[in-house]
Image 1 (cartoon, helix red, strand yellow):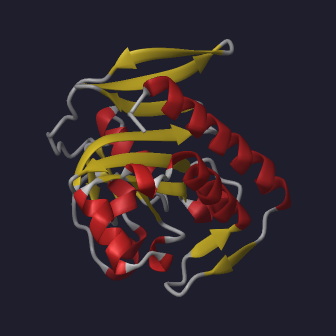
Image 2: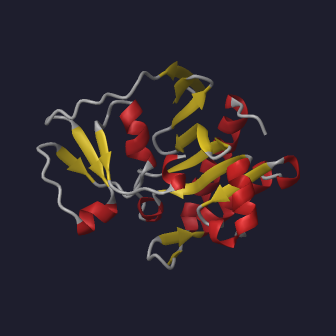
Length: 212
């Protein structure tokens, strides 16, 4: 499946709509790592898998909720071919508790290298995605998506700028920066926030689907 802005946008919007509908009857459970998982996580991952995965055509899928079900042969092939990496809901805890800091993400790897990515934040009505050499931000205005190109992320860790940290760092580490600190429980919000210049840094350990 080629990386196509309109196609990826359509998938993200449908997944986001599913998440908003399913949150009306939300229930959750804990996974082995003590993080939350909801019915929406599983249903959205199943939907995206059905739309994207085609191993016979050399297109694989690595998803947060099903990666442990994939065999070593499958994952090895995925890293040597074309693989889509998805997080059906990044920020499940904020999502489950009625907070807006969560999103749906789709990334694309070729030969083990991340080459494309897209994130949809349904409650902010924003999409950030790669499109060739550009990174675009889409904003919903009067029912239509308007796109603008984002520049490079700023690297200056000025003490007045906002820094996000992971929950793991907040629970087990110590941060002594002069900056204001935020812990959101979602990686996609501060990571695309770097491109939007809302954040100047994001500290902590992350997993493949957090950055894909």
